[in-house]
Amino acid sequence: MTEAERTVGTPAARQGMAVTARGVVVVRGGRRVVDDVDVDLVPGRILAVTGPSGSGKSTLLAVLAGLVLPDAGSVEPPDRAARAGVVFQGYGLLPVLTAAENVELPLQLRGLDRAAVREGAEVALARAGLPDVPDRLAEELSGGQRQRVAVARALALGAALLVADEPTAELDADSAALVLGAIRAEADAGAAVVLATHDPDVAALCDTRLHLVDGRATAEPAP
Ligand SMILES: Nc1ncnc2c1ncn2[C@@H]1O[C@H](COP(=O)(O)OP(=O)(O)OP(=O)(O)O)[C@@H](O)[C@H]1O
Ligand SMILES: [Mg+2]
Picture 1 (tube, rainbow, N blue to C red):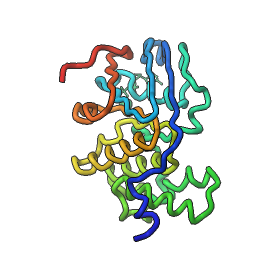
Picture 2 (cartoon, rainbow, N blue to C red):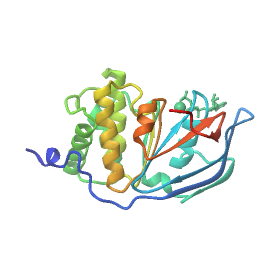
Picture 3 (cartoon, rainbow, N blue to C red):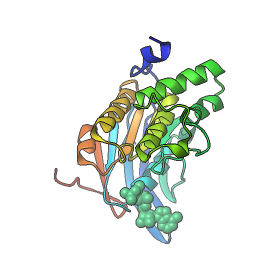
Picture 4 (cartoon, rainbow, N blue to C red):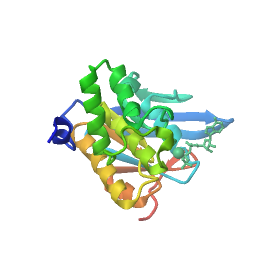
């Protein structure tokens, strides 16, 4: 058994990041697509953001990750993007890099040595359920495989804050369960986690839920 295999599924304990958002407003096309939303992200806990298509889930997640500045309201701490792992809804992979190279990127940017970069990517791909495609170009992968590469890239750094936009949308039930298990392991290791989902079963597995309709937080829909 390699070192990478031994550590699969057992991310190291770490300092998570509490995120406090108050009165967040994002205006797009003259409309409040996120409208006066409060969010608390807590280390060790997973928040599910649900709501119809266009209700503002991705926009809110981008704000929580620190990638988009709100037009009004406050989000603390301000420097969270540097400590966030992000799964983008459109994956955001570089198509001409291999699966492994995509996952290695954040580790390289962190300045790890070559062996640690390779092992980190190997472990993360295995945790996301994709140990067999490291040398395939991202553009050659199926949608579900790309999604798992995107998940692996977000897992690789052991982030204090994990922001995952519909991380299981393209996956079959087994792969979705594996990815959710990996996300839960991140929370158990201390990360604060927020994910967006259309799937009520995924939302039910999370610790708390926030339902958006037209950018506003509402009562949760009946199960
Ligand atoms: N740059 C923009 N200009 C105008 N409207 C925008 C822009 N970006 C987002 N929007 C609008 O903001 C709203 C919220 O978009 P967002 O992507 O956050 O929704 P979502 O809940 O993630 O939807 P989905 O479930 O389809 O992923 C949508 O109506 C979208 O069309
Ligand atoms: Mg979205």
